[in-house]
Image (cartoon, rainbow, N blue to C red):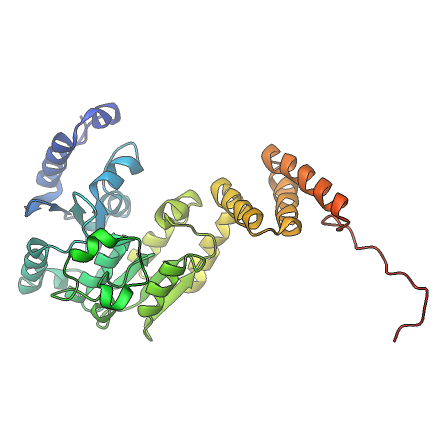
Length: 328
């Protein structure tokens, strides 16, 4: 054990209760850990004048990396920043009076005013929470990936993905996430416009200070997708430095051109959409730049299909039309 952190092999062997106990010990070393009712807890690390506030789910933390530490904690540590990680022991959207009371206490203590810059971050249900609770720190930067605006059935009956969670109250305190963003600084909402529900939630969050960043084929797990193209950590680091802009994000998004899972997902989308010529163009581009055998084999199949159907192969001009008469 080094500096309060267990060996990776030991972390994998811990059950959820023991893992949470380790996080508690880490909090004692870095700042504090505190349970928030039966279903949530918070880990604070006091390191510097910039604070990264992240909302994370226990199962996702344990599955994400070998060290099984919260993403916000790890990224903030790398930059010498303070971190405040609210941990949900299940998918809860953080709709819990114990969480409200804790955030209220931070406001009463002027906790956020002790920091030069505050960044709120989360994805999916945690993205909802990052937006909803950012109201506690006026002027904070908010980065939220595929967030829900609310699960109140009166407003989002078109989203059938979380029916069981509609029983939770989304109309009381910290409820409707778009309204909670009114006092924020820069807000970045990143989502896949091809996922209809995510696009509709993003539209509900549109405000003059909210930048919508639609990323086609980002997929339903945007945090994982951005991590795969090495964009997640630089994006959050830039946000903590106060230098994140849409232009910088789009430069990071270009990393998808070399990401295996993104390219496979794009090829799958083109295949399911019945667009063999575009799929062949994609495969040819990948083979030319990266030489991946799987795309080379698929390209051969597609070129054969296109030739049999009489369509030109990518990179080949279509046949000239017959010239037996005078053009009209």
